[in-house]
Image (cartoon, rainbow, N blue to C red; front, side):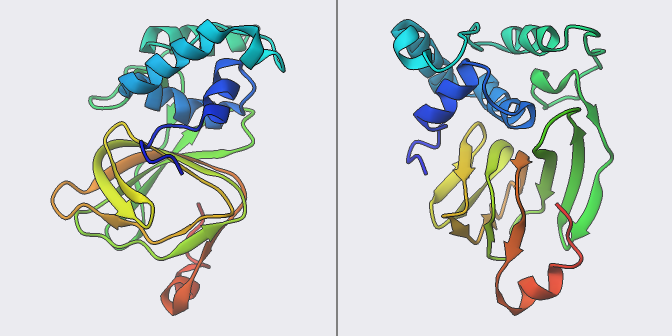
Length: 209
């Protein structure tokens, strides 16, 4: 976990080289659009050149929302994605994607699917009411999260708007949502979420992320 709440160097390099699953890449792109520090880090990776990106074909860096949208359009050579109006408060990189309706999945928590055709990861937005405590859980794969508004905190720190939370099977956490602002985030998930404790085990059959 990065103490500055930015993607790891490995994640940024893979993103810059176009080697990430599109769902995972979308969550990174949302973070880059919102976080100037990561935009600068990408420019530094570009400056290093082939030494960092030798394992893959270099592609233009995503340093703005316009760059992100242009890249997403180029990746679908046969039929560029239709651009939809962007809802207020959402990153512009979400424009090519179909967003589902908000659906409650627990007390104070709602989920909204993001349809990313061809992605191996599952992408969705989560919205939690102020003061919500999510069950302690771990993962069998990766969970990448960009905070869109509000904040939450867990064993690895406090994550606020524009931060990136990069977890894998080595992380077990118990998120607590900001008591005033609540939290809305976009998540790309591989593998399964395993809830801990008696309450988590009760919820496990009811929650399908």
